[in-house]
Image (cartoon, rainbow, N blue to C red; front, side):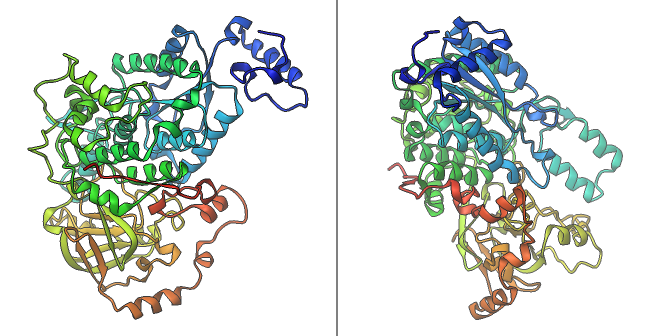
Length: 592
């Protein structure tokens, strides 16, 4: 390495972000001394430095293939003349995070952002999969100028139980509902439990992880083909290798900022991602996550515009929970690029992707690939959709002044226009203690209401919106009811469920005013959710609650205090308020 003054040298590689000792030459001298303890030579350290995130954890089976993916990415980096350096970040798994993974998403975003800022990396490969991981990584990427490229861990494969194909976690919920209804016994539910997650990887249905992977590819932040390849297949590792090679190319550009997240994630790119969200019948969670990513870039997501976009875009993918199949079948059909081929009239094809090609060029390249499936199993043509409009609908009304969302492609059609009596649960604890009681006053035509399960109220907006059918009704054969809350639900879930009611009950939103016996009207075709109570009465009830802060029991110190005092509402992404700049642009823009 050159002995020239580091302060006068282009800030790349080991010269980048020198620790501040007041003497740049000494900073570089010390850095090289310690990194050489790892056995690196000057020749290795002269190369572009590619950071690779390590999100492996024994608590995270979605990331069970991360060590192999890291080795593949490192291989690609070295093939292209770069120097790969792996660094750890927080790892979050949906089922192993208390109180909820959403509570930790923003912390992971901060961690990833500052690790990228603190270390001398010229480009970064972000490896992640489980629901909140890639959203956190993209939130971090939106806040830094270093080029980043995403490679998802990929979905699990499926297996069968007594001839029934199983997939986490739509079938987890289906079989658990059977167990609660006494349709199967403990021995059978235990046998199913052994089969639901047969390999490492993310859920193999169109849950949040698969939705985010598809949207990330559509937005241009990962290489073509990376969304659908199963986690355990050799192709997944070849894609990781290609990703490492591309990271070096990005690092060597005269101006790497031309491929920064800020350059790729334009309003049009977000529109492409939300178009895909509708077309795949994707997770409601993705709406919150991509709203948060956009907000960090000063892009405002208008929920009503999201709804208008969905009226132009049908659901084309026959995957659970909106359909019947699994991610491995989408892979066999040609993956996301085959979907995009059908969506071309709705897409901004000139959007730049991290590959260096436009989205239109990527679609054309995939179409010309002779290995792409010709006889599709799960991808419908636009003229024969699985659902005539987009998978999500945005609702408003006096119960949700700033919006709520329903995945109507996975709902019971007969319940999409429904009026019923409210059966209210004031907290998660109240729900757990009363939902299965024999003396619960509830009928099949009622509407189950959960309060205080939002970003601040829970805290962390858990996936509790999928309220269980009360046991006595489940045993009587009831399969679905209208359920509404300020919580989220898993992207793998199904049912007539209204989520993300904003403002949340803990912020004295109108949801907090609902009482047992109140009538509520849901009208999805009209996009409305209405509490049929006089407005003066609603105001009086809310006034009687007092200040929200007094009910939240916010601790004096710690992360929970930071979270509950700064987290924003669902309609703006549930990020920390101090991370969100003033919006200067808007999306989505419906392509005419």
